[in-house]
Length: 151
Image (cartoon, rainbow, N blue to C red; front, side, top):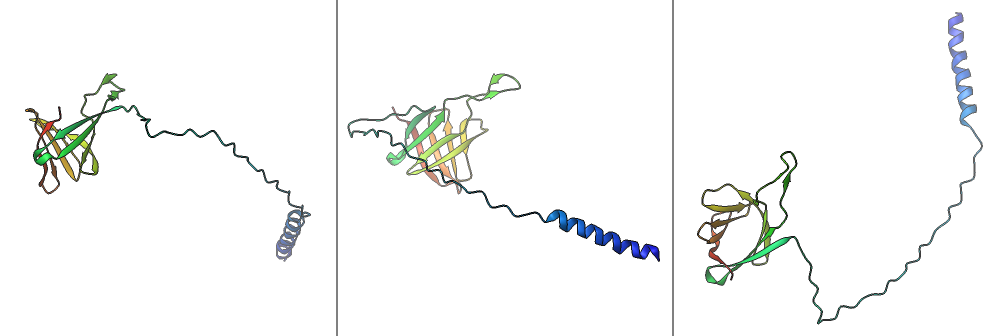
């Protein structure tokens, strides 16, 4: 019978201690000071219409003139990837940007025997060893054929 009376007594003592320890006087919140940042206006430079701004990029751009006077623009990256394990430069087979009309797609290199081939899920760009190139879409319809490098 003594065990029965001890459990409620421990429970009451623990509850009383928690309520006394948990209740502390409320403190007023700290006032927050709003900091205003002043914007310093810099002198704006005007670009005259006669000035031409050029940006140096790490890409080379070549244009191909195709059948029916279609122009295809191909951009290649100048930077070569370095293989850290072998400490040697990897070949120049890197992704290219192909622009046809007003649309540009990034094409990845693919393995081929007769030249270079780049493709993605929409387009395929083939550069043959004889200097001709062609652009086809994913349904194998020819977008640009008999493309020659623009002189």
